[in-house]
Length: 196
Image 1 (cartoon, rainbow, N blue to C red):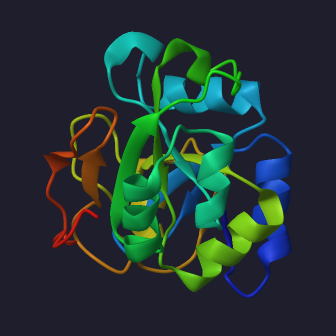
Image 2 (cartoon, one colour; image 1 turned 45 degrees about the vertical axis):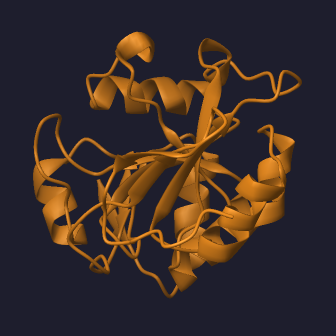
């Protein structure tokens, strides 16, 4: 495992483009990221987290642009208003998957969780790499890491970690809006004050 600097985004891009698992800082906690279009890297990440596809825990898709959600999910005025209001930010929004979106991982699910991080480095990385699949940086059953040092110590089998610290102590707020009304799944640092 190697450290990559936030000053040289090419190092992080190269890790992801080669099918590696990259530890990334967010405004909440550290995450583990792989490219959406790399099935082998996704399998490697699932194995690292000791997670089966049918476990109920789904990898989050991180994007750079809120409008890109429409490529992967069924949206309406209310869900897009929520997304535009709170993204980028400490929110994971679960929406019904578009039938036209076929993917070796997401074909096992009817929904997709989206996140657009409010973190300048990670947003720029997403603009250059395209969508990433991300999960919290922690061994199964443990609290998420909050620094690159923690990631390196607790998850030495990943390929690289971006140097730094995360912006918070708790993961994002999760809202499931796959039905008619939004359902809070997890309360994070973000308090949702309006849904329309």
